[in-house]
Length: 501
Ligand SMILES: [Zn+2]
Image (cartoon, rainbow, N blue to C red; front, side, top):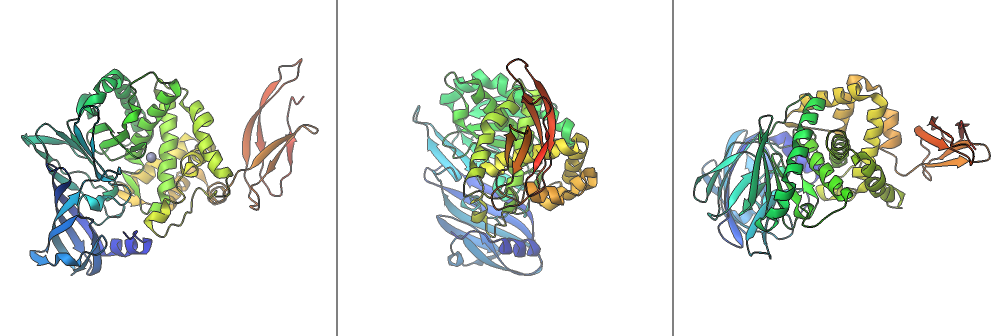
């Protein structure tokens, strides 16, 4: 299937405003499911296309008039929309998938039960429902699901079983297509509540003992993180209830779907695990919560800012987990374990800048999506936060959330917010740390007792480092001093270390 081009997404954004999705799914068959989508859309007038990846397209009706189903070509249905408001009704038969994308269906070998979850990232939503699949065409969703009577169904918005096997969901807040989600099956479900937010934890039945054993830990982390995110951001969680589902055969760590987060279920432990594994789970819980604001409330306009989405969630997730949960060594774990992911990627010939991927199509955006996006992005945002201080950092973040609430924004928008909040001109800092690849090498010259910085090969770049340096001798346990290592190129010796041996 073709990958969406940036230019196509810009044209469609200029042409369309999607006002609503109403999606009806029937999950009672085994290999396929019926999908009916009613889309409200307002057009400026022009040619565009709908995204749809069905097993078969049964009907497509525009403003009451049937259109030919055989016009569907390689996942796109061409549309000519006159200026004004329109209603599209699309009925299709879709296939369950088993690759962790779209509507993934799996059989639990432990007990033969069947489970389903939806993963819409990055371009899988059209294999579940007809849509205009790009992050900046947000709309509210209303979902209706028919399912086997022994299943429960969870989605982004709150829902209820109105008769055996029939589930109705509230109209959601505006969502990007890539984080529309549902979780359906005979899931084991636990409930709690905190600060007016209904909380849920889900797992398959065979993992119920593991979920039950850790439910207190997971609910407590979630509550502590909500309190801290509310305090730091000054803006309430915007998506009503908050369910966290541990789902089978997930092909990533977790996905931040608003109100319906999915985690790979090996994160439920059926045997003793080292503390670092629990830290990783706690930071993942916190990371996905950070996305509820940065990513979900305000969403990258295009995929080339995916790094920022992840770097921000990584920074906030690690910081908040370390500061308010029992895992107060989360930042040590991040510095000694997680950071190596970024350092290793940044040391390879294939290294790339953190920002400025410049992806011209959706698939290309994933080519540079790695430990540099998450881990180096985290390190660089940590540096920025320390440099400007929390008042400016969160002042800018709040400004960003308020300006683009339920909308989309770019890296430039966020940096404008930080500069408005008092960060000063960040152009040089951005160029040095976000737009230049590679690692500086910092060495101690023992003969002179000075530190030396060597920039990454072939990339003259000014980067200032602030280091804590401990020194000692056999007779003197030494000193610990902070050092500022300025970054002009070519490298030069920095000031002498106090207390050098
Ligand atoms: Zn993330």
